[in-house]
Length: 475
Ligand SMILES: Cc1cc2nc3c(=O)[nH]c(=O)nc-3n(C[C@H](O)[C@H](O)[C@H](O)COP(=O)(O)OP(=O)(O)OC[C@H]3O[C@@H](n4cnc5c(N)ncnc54)[C@H](O)[C@@H]3O)c2cc1C
Image 1 (cartoon, helix red, strand yellow):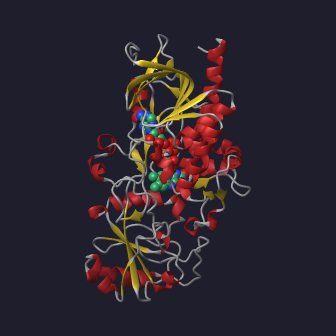
Image 2 (cartoon, protein in one colour; image 1 turned 30 degrees about the vertical axis):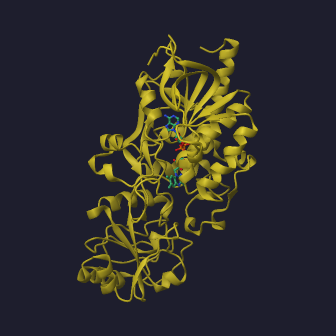
Image 3 (cartoon, rainbow, N blue to C red; image 1 turned 90 degrees about the vertical axis):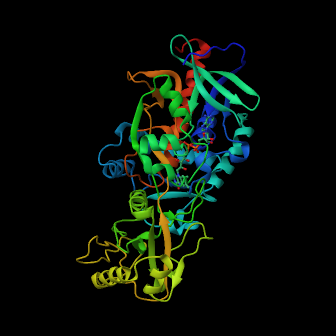
């Protein structure tokens, strides 16, 4: 949109970054390293800095000596049924190791997941940030000021400013004292998805999505996505899809945070009718939790219950990350059913059928132990221990929304692509708002990685563009 700059304060910037989450901070610090002068704006107050990143569990999926980038690309291909954009996947996993080292070099406290988060066992999350997302934001944020990156909070980008050639030359922003035209040589948008926008959720995800629990920042309302599409940015990705998780049903409706129960593969999951509906132990949680979060949303009342017994309780294998949420318990299955408001006979029948189907074998939470059921539908393919030792416990669980999967098309240089498949000059995008990598399902830990890798790339590209503008080489 071409907007008049009359009667509005005008500021001049070099590289302007929209959003203070991991993608925005990675972009800003990278652009600064590349020699640009950088300003970050965020519509949230400073105390709410860091967007969804702040709420995140801090797990990162990254190649290791045992897991090559090619293996992770194949995995992404498999779990998205071949829909993930391969070129972007190559960028994501190809740059990952170097970018993670860069993050560690900045002081981000990345550790082995087992240090703080045994629930991340198995799977391919190779790093965890001490203190989760909060720890990540608080370790990076001071680096901005130290390196001379300016940050303006309560400053909301509302429109892109374009010149006569269609090149993005800044944003119009709303501040507490009025509108400002922030002119810039290059802009990186890192404003997150639209999960906190009820109207967009219903428009793209369906009517039922209006009441979803929003796990993260209330400020991620799709602004950057809408602004980019208003100047011809191309939509890309799974616009009808979203990331969910198996989380405690007692979570807050907005900004619920890490209330996950990632240990559900060891439990028996039943719906309000007392029926099982998924293979709880199909795999480690990191490749099933998004699918199963959505499967719970599809059950009556969007609720289910993770049942376990004293054997697992003694080993402290099943818990909610938000430790204040404790499981309900009872001395018999019938009493537990009563406490949960489930049909007692039905639940007992489900438990009896399951116990009868459990095959012998050693239970090992660290590996896919193959301790399975036989002749049961749905099966339980691993970690099938009989539910037979009182007291019995239950966590009420639901789905909720973490982030949306539809976004804006970018190329391998993080340039925003328009509907005619051309790069929009001066505009780069990173993080949650880029589409094309995740469809329907998602490999845990890959969104922070996407924010890091594309943030860094977008920052470097924006700095080069700003430099070219200065020397007159840029368009
Ligand atoms: C509870 C929870 C747990 C998670 N756990 C993990 C995990 O363990 N591993 C993983 O990989 N991913 C996880 N995720 C997902 C991951 O945290 C996010 O997808 C990722 O952090 C997004 O980073 P971002 O920088 O793109 O966006 P954000 O961090 O959301 O930052 C976007 C910023 O843009 C700002 N903004 C929005 N609109 C405007 C505007 N108009 N003008 C200016 N600023 C604006 C927002 O205020 C916000 O600060 C989790 C998410 C949640 C909610």
